[in-house]
Each structure stands twice: as structure tokens, then as C-alpha cells.
Image (cartoon, rainbow, N blue to C red; front, top):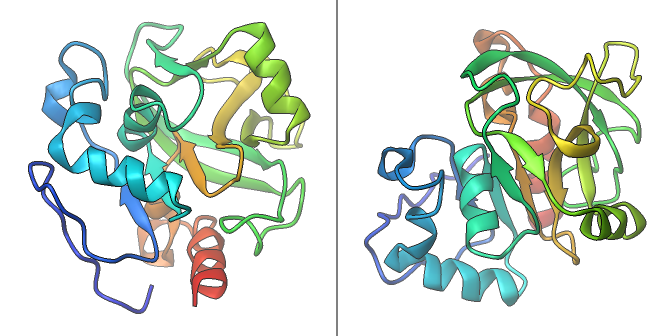
Length: 205
């Protein structure tokens, strides 16, 4: 993204002044208890929550998405995959909107391919919450077929309404289970994630 990132330890109590906070994928605390539940109470998360509520953009990828839901920064929860198995493969996603910090380089409705690698990636929320997310435009990405159709067969983990990622109410916080950073360079096997980071660079500079 043109600047070296500041690497912050989970046990730190402070954050440097930042244009963007990223909670990466991984298996924080070994995913004991629930995925992301323990990390959501790490010392650094108090400052992450404060910054997020103050408007600093926060991006949570895979385990980072789980942490954001456990910390209350995003609605819903991530549950065990419907297959009860770890899934690692490429999936097709539909970009629901392109008027956000994260998606301005995409076309609305564009179909992209990102990899997933998770066991607890099934997005769940009650019907009232799902209806609110739909109505307020907080659904970021959906699992879809290669032709863009939203089908049960295209849903890799049983997520409600094929939801792969959601925004907060102001669309400054984004959580998604697929990994855009793993397809951000041709050398990695794909570039569909590049537009997300270019969107951020353009909007945050």
C-alpha cells in the first residue's frame, strides 16, 4: 500500500495514529473457546474499539472478522461450517456495493474470486438483524456462482443469505471471511483483491 505497516502486538495497550487498522486472519489464541472470542478481549482491542467508534476504518479478514463480531463492532456471529470441516478453496463473490472505502475500484455486482480458509465461517444473525443489514446496505459480499447467481450450491459454509462480509452502520468497519490479501498480486495466483487495497489507498490519502 506504499507505506510500511506498524505491527502492533495484541498485548499492547496503545495504537499509533493510523489511517487504517487491519485485523488479519489466523488462529488467535488457537481458536480456543470460540474463534476470536479471547482475542476480542486483548488489551489492544480496547483502543481498536475506541478508534473504530471514532471513525477510523477497520478491516477484519477471516479471524479478524470473527474478532470484530465478538467485540461487538459488527453484528452477527461466525459459526462452525455446515460441513463441520475446515474448507480451503477459491470461491466466487458478488460485490454488493461500490460506494465504500473498500470497494470503490470494483463495479457494483462485480464477480470476484477470493480464497477461503476457515472452519468457523458460517455467518449467522437472526432474521430481524439480517433484514436490517439488507435494508441498510450493510452486506458487503455474498458467495455466488461464477455467473453471479446467489445459490445454495455456491455457499461454501452455510452462511445465512450467502453473506460473506458485512459493514457496520457507517461502512467504515468491514469484516469478511474470504482473503483479499491472498489475491493481491499476480505472483500469488490472482489479483481480484488488489482493487480493495487500491480503493483504500485512494480514499485514505
